[in-house]
Length: 192
Image (cartoon, rainbow, N blue to C red; front, side):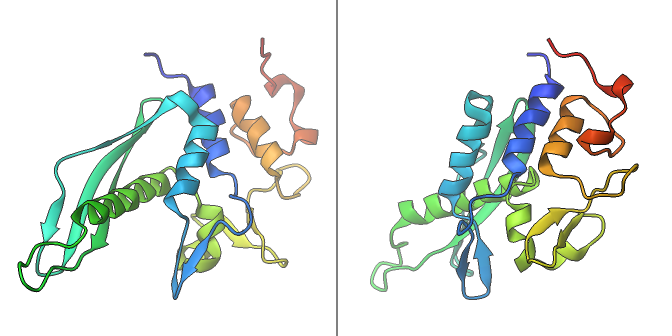
């Protein structure tokens, strides 16, 4: 299958859009996006163009009482590996793991989340809870209203680019940062 960069960019733009307000779940100091939100986003944005497969059997770390799963998320041929963990408890009398199947599923869900993170899904939503969001290399900053915005600005008018501006640049494969209003005509590729 030949790689379709335009389709890939279209999908990844949809994947990295903010999730609906209230999607981030906070459990004490830990903030995360539930696996169901990631899978729904993958289905809506990529449809038949994404897949997930586990790689290997679950690894059980008895001393740490954790299970680890690994897998690969593929979107139009682009692969990202994820690893995930879940805690488990054992029965006192037999030493066997309680609810083993559920612990494996939880570790796999964590692995999918990790792979989604490597496609930058949820970054905008989780930025307020992560120290890395202030790093200039990540380009996610906090606006005065507390909403996360991309730090890209138009090279002509110096206004912040909107998601629509960024999508237009991506579709037309324009590397320089312009708002839609200031994209030079000769850079707009004919689509048809």
